[in-house]
Length: 374
Image 1: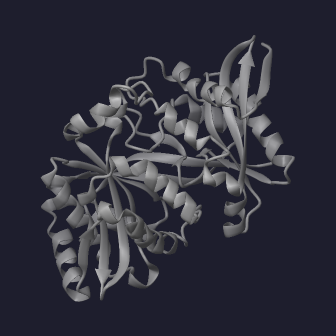
Image 2 (image 1 turned 90 degrees about the horizontal axis):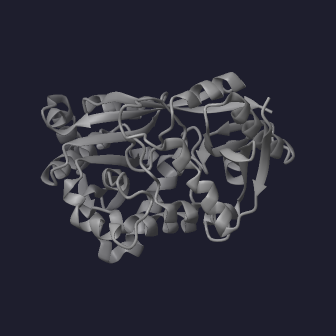
């Protein structure tokens, strides 16, 4: 048996960078891996500046075998999650490892031990670091790069989880949407037209010149619309402001929409161009030259991702989702975007699944959240 050592990484800038960069070892030569932007991951793991850590703790661990780095993991205590869901669980995240069960076991054991020492009784993940970030492990759909802010991992990770004794907590679906096919859907068009007429819906796109006030509309919808969902964690104003600041340079205003009824904002949809189509060639670096490509090459992007589509509870089941999907599709077509992904959708979220079906969407990727009692 080889000597496996697990070391705790103090959250210094150099350690965080070492932790992130380990992924390059795992995915070397994988044509479908999109190297994360190093600066973005550094911000996420900066516990002094990321507002997530005002109610959460995270510890980074690195595995060494015969002195060589072979894996990494983070253990996460998320007080907001446990308060909202009345649970007493912890999370693991940022998992990467060579195809070696002993290494995976040692990493997961270390995360479990850290969570146990804080009085938690189950471990769920991967959460990187929460369900508001990259979440879950790719289960099906390894032949295609991930869309923006979606996870990707080697297929053997599934065996590492199963062999450790991890159980399925929930599966998440990603639906592929073909715009020309969708725009021929008589059912969608009919439902959208009837719903728009009945509720007198007004669709407005985000006004980036009034970004601060527009964010207030987002906050109004966001934490109401998703509150009943499994695993949902409400974002604080500071967290939403932080995320918006990061996404603003990438936003296509015509694809960020609000729905209003009688002057009241009742729904919000955030659709992002799939910048992963560009990031895949950046090797994790934005500066000094790749930042220019964000603007000069964005017309080459052929996919978009529906990150968020939420309707406040009292206006749900009125067909407003069909109105928004139809509007998004028409606008995307004008931009030359003919393919879209709606993700992620909980396997038991029947309302969202019906919406995806109305769009003639097909499940083309699945993701799994694991859990184990500790």
